Length: 87
Image (cartoon, rainbow, N blue to C red; front, top):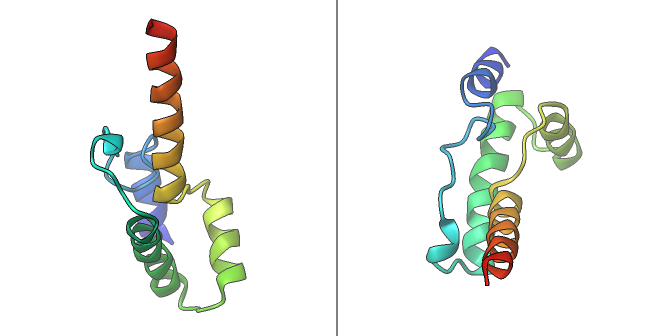
């Protein structure tokens, strides 16, 4: 738990993950996004020593941890709107 707190403290904008820059330039399939989320879920499972996904989701929520697939979707949407505004 201390490690996760330090990661969130050190990297507040990326929530402990390496910052996701311009991931929309390389097309990711649904299985790619699920694979990224799987890595995060497994990290939480090992950290909290549980396989209960309700506990994992609650812990992610409590640490304000956003899944990579959601971050990438949000980045794509924000950049799309920015491009539309510049036209």
